Image: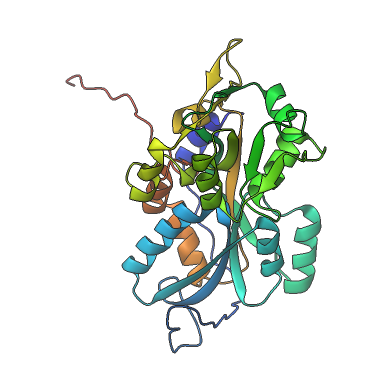
Length: 315
């Protein structure tokens, strides 16, 4: 089923999470002053959230708008590799993680045993893994076979840089969906984070980088606009197209299932109550949060914002 079909089904109706029974409390401190209260609600309190670093620009925007709407709410976010986010979820202090995969059956069984309930999870949006090249780079179109040879070291003259020194969602996605279990070549190196990938590619003509789509192309973000004169997006062999058609990552090519490097953005919420975690999750799932994903060049998964035909004829 294509992403377009999924969105059409989602647009038919949105299911809000039901009210559930137990409540976990989670205090904490961070850069912002914690509120002097023991319990939280959907509009006030303090929670800790761990987020895969490749989603930082869009989640920064979600938190900014949510906290401006609810001044007594504090969403304390830490950005780190995906594997570390899942480790954080095992801690009492971390209520929610935002990553690019759902819980496995083994992980669900673990949390059911530890918590006596199953954490809630769902897809919030779909994100592209963008291939970025230097403005003067010659390689701007890749078949899927060429991507495989690029990542497994068969093209040792190409400098490939990924968005983390540990297991980020981008690294895991490329291992699962492109390498299919084989290992990265010696030409593949890791930068400290996604920004470091962009900086490296901007400074090296032969470099090829992989980053999440919310890091590049947002014309409303001055920091991203500044990269326009230094880097550009590569095209990848189109999926579900005629032969020799290539696609750039965009909301249109993701929705029509043409751009092949696409991944989901999941929330996983460890909250058996209607607390602040539920409030933030609802916000990201409903119109305002979904529009933030859309503005950040992701494809919203909960609401469909496409143009619909209307009947303008008189009755």
